[in-house]
Every structure is written in structure tokens, then in C-alpha cells.
Amino acid sequence: MTLLRRRLPAVASVAVAALLLGVGLPRATGVGWRAATEQLEVLTLPQFVLLIAVWLLGLYAHTFLSTAALPELTHRRALTLNLSGSAVSNLLPFGGALGMSLNYAMIRSWGHAPGSFGAFTALTTMWNVVAKLALPVLAIGLLATFGELPPGHLALGAVAAGLALLVVLLVVTLSLLSDRVAAATGTAAQRVVVAALRLVRSRREPALDRALLDLRARSAGLLRRGWGRMLLGMATYAVLQVTLLWLILHMLGSSLGLVYVFAGFAFGRLLTLLVVTPGGVGIAETGSAALLVALGGDAGLVAAATVLYTAITFALEIPVGGLCGLLWWRRSIDPWRAS
Picture 1 (cartoon, rainbow, N blue to C red):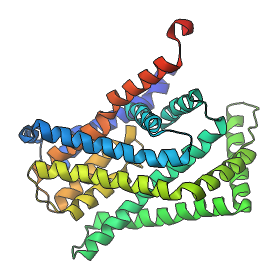
Picture 2 (tube, helix red, strand yellow):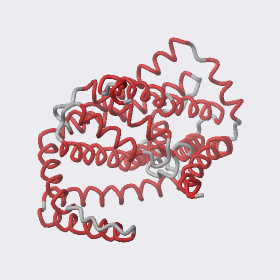
Picture 3 (cartoon, one colour):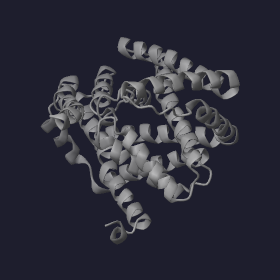
């Protein structure tokens, strides 16, 4: 019974994702799964190869962020970290913690200091969250500039994202620049964690206040030296993801403009912050497809493009990342000795 209770949230999360993809996406576009997948039959093998190449190029661009956040890391290992962590995160609801644990084990096996992982995780997470909040703000600006009034739900989402972005940037900036703010944040986190440990009858008192001050010092130094590479990596990654979605739509015959495709992509990236399902899958796709149709996209083509885009950027990461993780394990651990 206890095991069932522990697994119930995970089962419920996967069920929600399946329901959103199986029912929500067809309702958002008005096109069933069979009709959507039939649209993909027009694509040729060279086109599929091009799409995979753009996807891989985007992942490589993201390694510039990772290698700036952990300077001793190579691009190849950064790509392995990204894919392996994503494979775990995409398989399980709230799988980010397990993916992070795997990445920590990988980084330690490569000889990096334990303290470097905290700054690496903090900086890469910060840039990913900032990007997801900034994209809808940029999208609504582009739509307004090109004379198109954005739909009400996009405007509302952009306003909410803009406010959240300001809060995140303010907190991050003050924490990095002010010793007092960093100390206060550390003290508050210390109290919350200690109180949580008391609820489970643990007497541990982790020194989070000192740990966060050390993390702040490491992160501030890395950000000063590598912010340009971090920004370049994050921006290029986003551009290539938008390009991938635009290519899929136009290979299928859509005439939807790049600005509209960007708006749909940006809204979908914002919805991935809702980690109710593994990787936000189902929620992001349904919201993005609904917006693309509202902006004038052909429902059938949008549905087919959403299915293929999700298959490449989400589903394909699971086997590829799993293979990367397996290769790392075989090189790092002697299976005979472990047994």
C-alpha cells in the first residue's frame, strides 16, 4: 500500500500527459491523431535528416552555456550531460531531480570538484528559466510591431511572464551583488529546510546558509567571466528550436509566417515551466498548437507539425540520452567489480 501511494503521483502525472496529448491536442486543433500523422507521409528522408541535424545543432549550441558554467567541461561531455539528464527527466514526472543526480555522478566521475556542480546547476537553470520567461515578452512585441494584435491568452501570458521575469532577475541580481541579500536568502532557506527535516523527525541541520554564500561567490565569478558565452549559447539554442518548428511546418506545406511560429513556440516554452507532467509534455504542445491555429495556421498541418516536433525534441532524447548514459556508465564503472 505504501509503494502504491508513492507511485500514485507519478502514475497520475503520466496519465495527465497522455490525456493532454491524446485528447487535448486533437481538441485544440480539431484534428485527430490519425489525420495528423498521415500528414507526415509527405516528408522525405533527406528532410528528416535535415530536421535531425538542426535538432543536434541546437543541442550543441546549448553546450556553450554548459561549458561556460563549468569551464573545465568539454563540449562533448556537456552534450552527454544534457542528453542523459533529459532522458531521465522526460521519462518521469518531476524527474529533474533524478536527472540532476545522474549529472552530478557524471561530473564527479570526470574529476570535477563537488562544489562546482552547484554553480553549474544554478547558472544553467537560471538561464533556462530566464529564456522561457523572456520569449513570450519578445513574441508579443514582435506581433505588435508587425501590426497583428496578439490573442488575449498570449497577451495575458506575456504579461505574467514579464512580471515573473522581472522578479527572477531582481532576486538573482540582488543575490549576486549583495552579501546581505545572499545571507538573508541563505538564512531563510536554512530555516525552511530544518523545519521540513523536523517534520520527518530528522535532527540534521545542514549548513545551507554557508553553502549558499559559497555558491553565490562561485556563480558570480563564472557569470562575470562567461556571461557572453552563456547568452550566445542560450540564444542560439532558442533560435535553432524555432527554426526546427518552422522547417517542419513549411515542409508540410504551411505558409504561417516566422513571427507567428515564434509566438507559438514561445508560448509552448513558457508552459514547460508547469512541471505537472514529465518535461511539461502535453501542456506545452496543446497550448502551442492552439495558439498557432488561432494565429491562422492550418489545423491539420499544425497538429502534424506538433506531433513531429515533440517526437524529435522530447521523445528522441530518451533513447539517445539513455545510450549516452549507458556509454558513460560502461566507461566509468567496472560492471564485474560492481557485481
